[in-house]
Length: 454
Image (cartoon, rainbow, N blue to C red; front, side, top):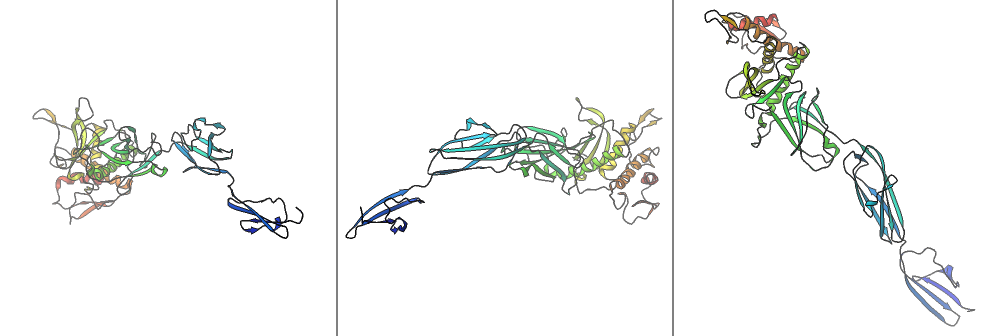
């Protein structure tokens, strides 16, 4: 068509570079609704034609693997998710790979939960294929570590650790571990639960020591099983949950259990002191107790005071046997605020236990020539009234030993508990003095004098 001029328009705008071209190619089309118009002009007349059309976007797929962490734990389910975006196509296939191995059972799954069988570093990959063949893939490296273990630091309310104390770890229905804290009050439970299993777990502190020297009983709860404090429930939904601080403090009693939770601070205090006494004889005297464990009955209402008794019923025998030692602490003196220092309830009475275990009698019997039989002395702290000084030696040792323990453990007190206000003192024993008034309780003079000599 000679003499004809051609004008091209795109969406109402003239495409000047296409003027007089018979064929025009739109090099960079954009997605959307469009209109192309062609004007033919021969000098006399103009002719028009146009075309409405739609440009579809180019098809595309992108996939990203999404995880909460790149660290997994042995035997603990680990979930990987995908974030998939599609343009101009639909998902046709999804394939997962562990290393180079295809997980065919996960065909078309957008999420994969995997339980690592061993520690190490693993590569997880996913590929996505669209209906038109569009392809995308992503991969991630996962480090598998040993299953996290629950650790706990067990202390009293002031932060003093309960060393080598019995601890148990259990779910609501199953005992998992029954072990001990170390000499720093720490414990690790080997049968810890998997991360995020959604179950409740409990920790029980049993007031008996690992060397098996003594066991605390709470008479208000049970005299046939060790006193215990139970804590929880705990859940382990994050790795931070596996590190616990267990502080033994009083809490309201639970009528469904034999435990007396309002006595927990008392028991923790007594455990720490009795443990110190037991280890003192282990290390300073290098002594191994023959008759153990020593039952220590706390919160006892049938008696008054704190005392060592050598003729109790052995609670561990079948059947129970007599002539077995024990320490008794009455209800009032079981309170954690009741200190009888330095001859306190734990160190003094444990010294009697040491002497009884070593010599087999406390105090020794003497022969009654009238009745022609051996009898036991029963007037403690009455050395002058007794037939000899044996009781005074016994009590003197049990009064001196706590002073020695004070030196070892770095504690101090204001003086022996026997001394009253306004008494004059002589013969200093570190921070402790012996009274010299003639009118002071003469029956205690003998044992205090011996204690001073020691």
